[in-house]
Image 1 (spheres, helix red, strand yellow):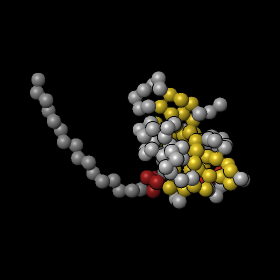
Image 2 (cartoon, rainbow, N blue to C red):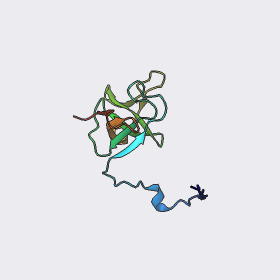
Image 3 (cartoon, one colour):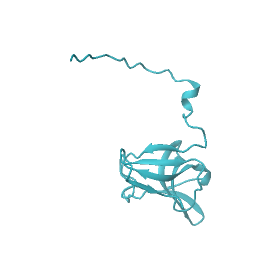
Image 4 (cartoon, rainbow, N blue to C red):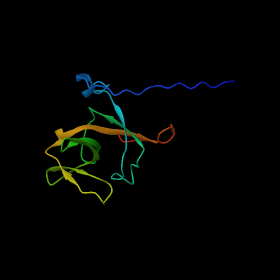
Length: 124
């Protein structure tokens, strides 16, 4: 048996107006991979989180939110009438946000890549 190899070129994409949009509709859940160690010990680098854009964000929820024009994954906390984004790893600082409208979605589930049995849900 002869193995044939093909070369498939990778060409740079020209950004279009649609490229700024996600492939998901606004109300559809989407998955993200955890990067870094700011949410240890609950969320390790490489784990997959499922985010519900229209989920109910409340004190203690794990959320994806806008901070300094970037999306960030943190625990939402309400302290002294102010909302803040709290990393679980004490090596990272809390960040205050203008309001709950900065939240872009609520984490509803996590799983290890390639593992159907290792799932944890974060909604009631």
